[in-house]
Length: 316
Image (cartoon, rainbow, N blue to C red; front, side, top):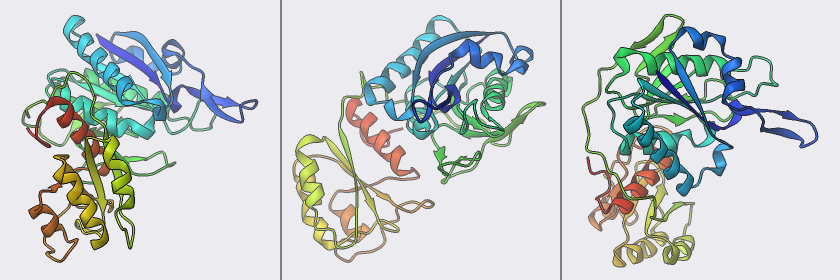
């Protein structure tokens, strides 16, 4: 039995001329009706959890969704869970679920880039493919995954890479772990080793995300510091930034607030090898933490989880 958890997003939308654009419209039963092949994949039950655009998913809402997933796994014991979700913040939701939910039962997140009003709507295919993955015996132990345009991504690695194309998702620090189609799910990567989960009581931590610009003098860093518990810096290249911002970073560290160093580059990770003022090596020696193989959004979510759980960044 699969549990289909509908939360909204473009997959649930249609064009409304009076509103002047796309708006939420379809519940789970309607969406399932658009995907008749689902009946041949596995038995399922439908839960209409919400009809939210992805950008309406705040930390409290995300934590409520995470808790609902955990509750379904504990009380209903499904073979898998499929979540439909807006694409703009799938990256954060998938990462949160991957880091806080036991991986024994597959949790598969999907959505659509087009609405039911658009020619070539991708929603029915993605929903059916996600169900195929969730129902596959080989998906056991893989935890949270994202399925889009026939590709399967690890939930801790996936990112939205293209704003409007159907093939919107990728894994900038890894690769797809498999593919799916009418023949079912095929995995090309082994089941990942279990990692320690970080499970806070809620997502209470406030983490600022501040991009560096040329000539940055740290003014935005100082403005953000009083209202936040931690900081993710979006630096240049392999983790370098203007020297004018360095004193403001030291003020965060002096207050015991963790600072994580990410890169604005789409591919590659922070590599602290430059020792000039503002260079990554100098920042790391001062106590700044490299983001690791994470996108900017993933680095921020990791720090939110860590601070909320009272754990070190990247523990596990």
